[in-house]
Amino acid sequence: MRMYDIIEKKRDGKELTEEEIYFFINGYTNGDIPDYQVSALMMAIYFQDMTEIERATLTKAMVESGDQIDLTAISGIKVDKHSTGGVGDTTTLVLAPLVASVGAPVAKMSGRGLGHTGGTIDKLESVPGFHTEITNEEFIDLVNKNKVSVIGQTGNLTPADKKLYSLRDVTATVNSIPLIASSIMSKKIASGADAIVLDVKTGAGAFMKEIDDAKELAHAMVSIGKQVGRNTMAVISDMSQPLGFAIGNALEIKEAIDTLQGKGPEDLTELCLVLGSQMVVLAEKASSIEEARKMLEENLSNGKALAHFKTFLASQGGDASVIDNPDHLPKAKYQVEVKAKKSGAIKTIIADQIGTAAMMLGAGRATKESVIDLAAGLVLHKKVGDSVSEGESLLTLHSNTEEVSSVIEIIEKSILISDGEVESPVLIYGTITE
Ligand code: URA
Ligand code: CA
Image (cartoon, rainbow, N blue to C red; front, side, top):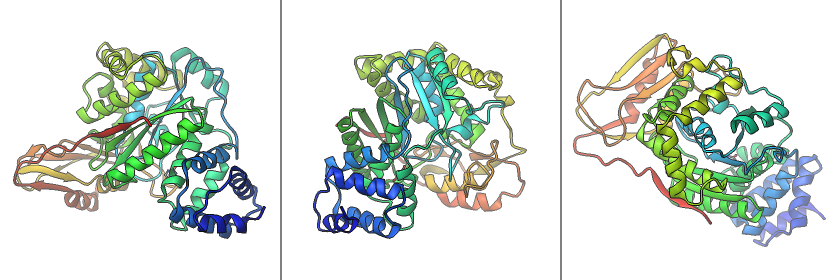
């Protein structure tokens, strides 16, 4: 078999066989096939697309290119959640203890973030003492005991995806549905999930700016999941404005605590209930979405979800007193209010711009080497559709540096106020189950 023929075949719009897909993935992973040939193939896929079968085969080949986590020692159906990424997306922090509280095991492997805010691990590390450097045995024991644990990335997972993603990044081939779908699904499958819930974001702060593209990506991933025997569902949710109020690591922990007490932001709470219900159904702890939602709502109001968060933090070294005393979380030296310059209704809060502002304050990493300031970030007081009076606070900046004028400049350009009334944006554009 020759790589040249595979490139030519895809260039001409033909379907690749399983053998051909495995040949190029394995050859690329072990260094036999050079970047320039794989670049050409990626570009051919970008223009010619892949059939559903090719996409599933590509995913399987990437999964098999490295280690696969074995979670069979954990009893029950392990459902993982994946978000395509957004600004101030606090859902994982809420969902992990919430879903665990109804008995569905949450065995989460997570990473650090690049960009807007930290990843789930960065956020959790703002709880003093909390750590995710635990052995696989501890991880499995904790999930069996408490139904929830988070571990840092271990092993050599999907090396083919790592190489391909870096190559796509510099060859203008990131934005391809079959390539994104197989990349995301390969990582979830290799980390041992039996079933997967996807939160596909759309809007200014999302990867997929248009709803139709988000839907197509969701369908592609659900199809791959089903073909490889991992039941998969997806939700399309809004990311035109940030989710919830808080953006920043310790600030999002505080927001998660509020939400687990049933007094969190409306949009974050609703999205967690929608995604959580799907997770509970896939874990077979409820037979319908309605029943699952009721169980979750109950545990938000009776304190069980919060109790699971407390146990989870404490069992990985975290100071669980932060739950009753959020003051024990890292706190920034300066709190600066950004005020409305006119009265009206909030028309837009451009998510990606607000994310950039949070990153400039230190909440995220501009490069892989940047050090995160766990206390930094911002808290919105208004969301799109809210009315506002001149001089009223739009948001509070939390900063450890006094000089924040360049951040304020970005924020003032990203929060637009209109004279008339504005409707709140739709939060959930739909759920996709096939
Ligand atoms: N996220 C991924 O993990 N892979 C892609 O290809 C795009 C976004
Ligand atoms: Ca948030």
